[in-house]
Amino acid sequence: MLNKHLLKLIVFSLFLFTSSVKSAECLNDKITRVTGKDECLAIHTFVKNSETKIKNLVIFIHGDQSDNGPVSGMINNAQGTTVPNGTVKVAILRPGYFDKAGNKSTGNDCGRRDCYTVTNLDEMTAAVQSLKNHYKPSRTILIGHSGGAATSGIMIGRTPGIAEGAILLACPCNISQWRFMQNRSGPYNSLSPSDFIKNIPKTTKVFAITGASDTNTQDVLARDYVKSLTDLNIYAQYKSLPNVDHNKANEIYVIEEALNELLK
Image (cartoon, rainbow, N blue to C red; front, side, top):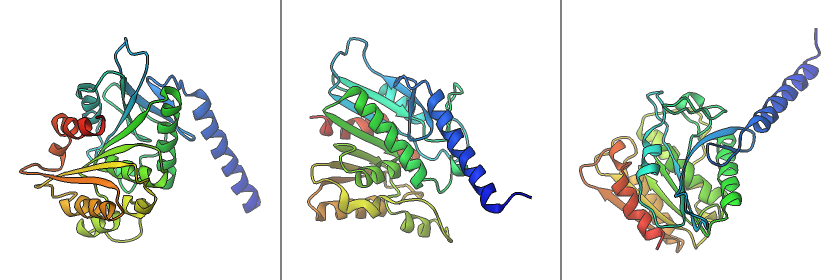
């Protein structure tokens, strides 16, 4: 029988080998794939062929997609959102997620539940940083819906300077409070945007937008988050959308209004 310590070492070595193979085999063309820390993330890139100098990098991050289906909404939003010249738009598939065409990011989606983990945030942060290093934009904006908003909110505080601005649509900006409001109990693994507020640079601009009829991520979560930011003299605005539910907050017209302000 193998010594327990030896067995653990073998398993850990296999994990490291598998992770390095994923990164090494990743196409990493920054158009359809980008490497994270250890994983290969699928992306959709939208930019005019005539663009030679990229001024703005706009990253779109989808929600948890709890129906277990393919990601589509944020990809469509990335394609359809009107932006100024010199802007590249990139929709990233979070670890473990796939799209309608069968493109899939490697990694773990945690059963699409409780997955704003250190591991997955490291992957997303590394992917965004890789895209920034590639395009060298003057401004980077993160746009996230629901779980994607949580991911974006965590990143701007956990990795100061990762973006100049963020648009948080239907954000569960305080994970502990959100879990309580959803009657979820017990331990959890997710990080929370509210835990990293004090690290957000004063130059960062944040728009948080939630539907007034949202019964998933109730508006108090984003509203209180914005108040905490403004108390620290960070530019932040909260907007409630009348008669709009959780998914309808993730619409192009909502994104464009906030994005136009950030790209002025």
